[in-house]
Length: 344
Ligand SMILES: NC(=O)c1ccc[n+]([C@@H]2O[C@H](COP(=O)([O-])OP(=O)(O)OC[C@H]3O[C@@H](n4cnc5c(N)ncnc54)[C@H](O)[C@@H]3O)[C@@H](O)[C@H]2O)c1
Image (cartoon, rainbow, N blue to C red; front, side, top):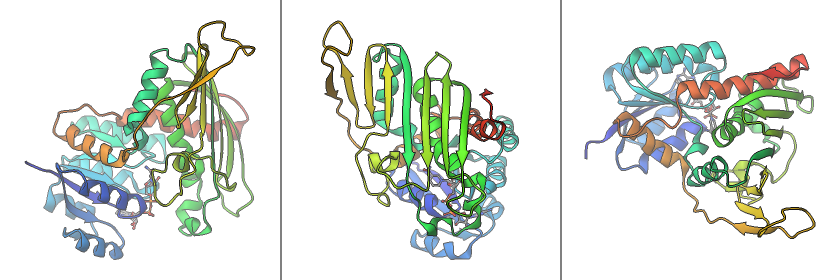
């Protein structure tokens, strides 16, 4: 089998996760690692691939087919543009960039270079997510009326040692809420407005700590989402599904979707509906579990990246799509700062 030659730029927390996934995809081959920190060289040695401190040099000498860009958000733009220019396809971590201006540069360059830019919104690769998308979009809940979501943890102090994580560009809105907003756009359709309040002050960082967000969707549904990185709880997506061994599984539900016919606990997937009519609160409503198998979305994402590079699948997310998620997420700051609803 001719393998798809992949390189990694930025071998930190998430870069290592992608390395593991690449190792589990038969059609993928890791060919090089670049990182501005010389300490990452040992990782390249462990993986028996050449190491570069210059991404340009790596691209020109190794000519990978695809590049994972896993640098801090503020440093996404340059390696993405360099990789596109070298004619590689790109999978850049989320958020696509820290600003809409940079995201637009990437969209333009992707079109000019005729190369795809996928963005690491890895939740789109769960079979469970496809199931829920089909259920909601296929009318399984009736008309979607509303969504309630929660993400609350206390991140460890060590997480905030790198200065870039204390900034707004890497606070819980742009690092964590963006996953929720992308998920909601993917499941429920386009967002048309965002309102929000943010709070900070328990830690001495410029970034926000807590946000309450009101969302309005194109088909009329409304939703609320509460987010905090200073409040310990079992209610985050990561703890709910146990996708990351670093965050012990809580198996709690973190979302509820409600429609005119039925309601869904998520991600444990329990569908609540009445057997027959009338569907009202004086008649019993019954829970029906929907079976799903856990799978590693990073492996599925890497396999999909190879298929996109080889032209056998269309991207499940493009730079343009991810830019819409970024726009909606940045609107949380705009709405909170101005104290007004932001139309998207
Ligand atoms: N999909 C997810 O669930 C998920 C999870 C965590 C992080 N992320 C995203 O991944 C990105 C990286 O986060 P992280 O936590 O892995 O960061 P990190 O600090 O652990 O790793 C970043 C790595 O990039 C290297 N680096 C910095 N500038 C570079 C440059 N110009 N060229 C090459 N290497 C460079 C650093 O030396 C470091 O090794 C962020 O955008 C973050 O939002 C996504």
